[in-house]
Image (cartoon, rainbow, N blue to C red; front, side):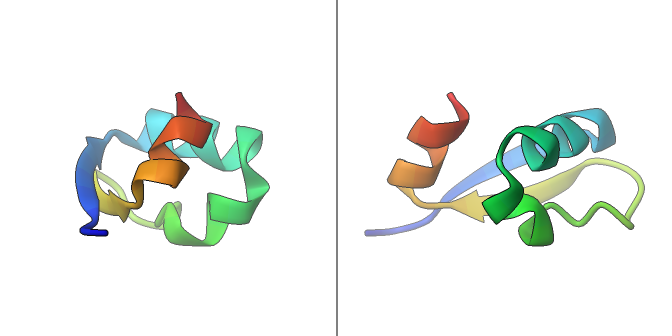
Length: 48
């Protein structure tokens, strides 16, 4: 399975980290500005 790259703002990354703690370490919360994060299809379904 190839990763799906998604661009998230700081606020979006914080919300994902709050709702799905298992993904929090990948959300780059210490970085400002939008960031592109790679997710598997299953991870994206969890976020949706």
